[in-house]
Amino acid sequence: MVKVLRAVAAGAAAMLLSAPVASADDHAGLVDVGGGRSLFMNCQGEGSPTVFVVPGKGSYAEAWNAAVPDDDPIRSSPYDLIEEARIDLTPQSTQPLVARTTRICVYDRPDTRPDGDEKSTPVSQPHTVQSDVDDVVSLIGAAGLPTPMVFVAHSYGALILDLLAREHPELVGGLVFSEPTSEFLPIVGRPDQNAAFNSDAQIGAPGEETVLPDDAFASIAAAPPLPQVPAIVLSADRFAAPSALKPDNYTQAQIHQANDMLASALGTTNVIVAGTGHNQMLYQPQAIADEIVTIVDEVRAGN
Image 1 (tube, rainbow, N blue to C red):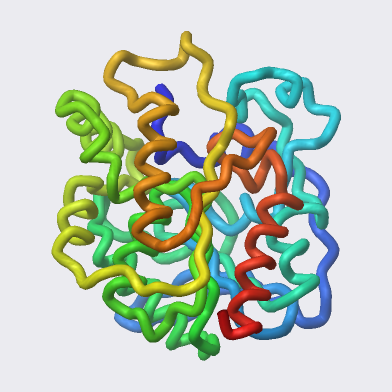
Image 2: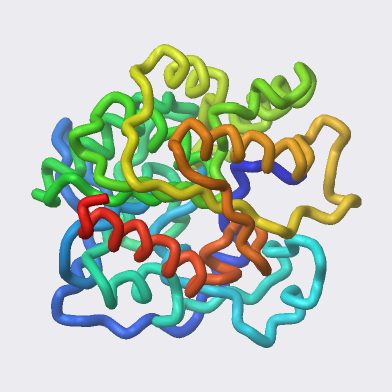
């Protein structure tokens, strides 16, 4: 089943191999956010503004330190076949590439990373987008991260970032939306597609992250306007194979239309990044890093 919320496949994540090169300024570990809870965060590099990444549903920081190797056969397919890919941890991935220019932090939401000793504290699932926004604000404060920041969001993370930017514009210096779950999807979708999307997002095994899209869309609709800051929306040119789609899945054309509408609301453009599927950072980490750095440079220039 293909969903906009699809993140790194669990099987693929288990295949991550060679670790990226660390630097003296890197930090990875749990941050106490209060209430007996901690969130895992990985920060690399130095410089300002800080980049803060909000991963997609079920995804986590490791995905931004990984990539599909250049010689993987899925790269020759016209379809998004990330579930069949070999995914390696590599310094030629998005987070370490951006870290060459500025500080970049990525966090794990609860119930996302399947293994390891430093998991974010679990919460009840499904959970609301407001709780995710509150967690990001608490994490930024607890970690003492400087603001305003350039925020990067992937997939479901875009709904978190959309609401956060509206509620806390003082934190936001720039915005990058990579293959976002656009707030405009319900407008372009048919009723059966919207219902299926909302239902599918709440399905998961015990201990896995599940979310409430309808709640998120309603929360965003009731929030203040988006801030006008340097921004970009990035969309994929590869989509799931027809055999993997159901009649009630959104089409790629609908997703691109919703992303165009999000870009318009931000006063920017929707850029189709060649050679990418939904997990753009795994397909073309250099291209995604370059887009992030472009927004960083615009913020530095005061644009």
